[in-house]
Picture 1: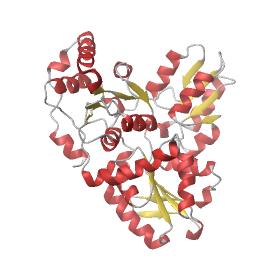
Picture 2 (picture 1 turned 90 degrees about the horizontal axis):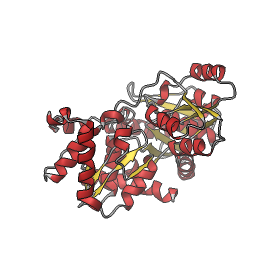
Picture 3 (picture 1 turned 30 degrees about the vertical axis):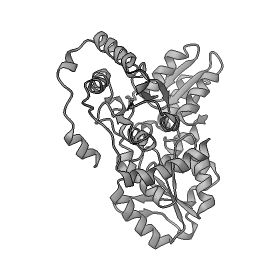
Length: 368
């Protein structure tokens, strides 16, 4: 069942949750957490709102939450405060008797939606005709379960921004070329860091179903899917020039989902975890312009007030789909568990789950 099918089946948020005060909702969520105890596990991604992240049993980036979901054996209910692909990953890695819930089914990922299974299968057939059996597929965890399953079925693995370098290096030891889905920027930045020149990188355009490349196909080592993060792509060279003019001595720190030009012009780049660790270890009084999701930047500004931190793009909005999860939806999900009528359960079918788990486990083994 696809995301659209699930959305069509979902009942809207009941009206009673729209009128409850914040205090009432917070108190009720605390009560339910206490009532369910170890039967309930709430993982929360760093990009979640403060009103939600306060209830997370663990916070982290995609890799950390994938590992924690795999390790969790006590919880009967995993209420995932993140987006759809993360909840799918939790369902794939958890046991059959555990129930994964996404508080709001509208919490998706535009990047993940840029590569569907039909596009990928058509692209794979054409790329096999062009390059033969020389390609290993990799997919960023910001992808649907069906894409992870496709990758697992064809010998590949998932990657996160934390371990992309190690996983791309591993993949190129297996085959002459890689197909990197669905974020072209993370793939390009990672491959370049490993010494692969831009001239050896092609781009697959899934809309026009063609390979974008000028040169001899024999020279291609990396094929990048033409997808991107709608948040991180909004950080620009103009933003960097402006912040350097406004804040002399500032260090620019960005996520590798940003464009190649922005990453090259920054002082440092890295995963969400690296961004957090870098700011934590930075000198008191140092100045930083951070290019990543706004909820996290604001949280860093509040947590590390002894440092001068700004968003690289002052007009940046939080990730809209990640921000679908809010107090009313979280409370609705938790009360449905108490009432024995679970809503918004995420369930990946057995075959998809089997091969997706293979792709995930290949990554997790390399990340220990």
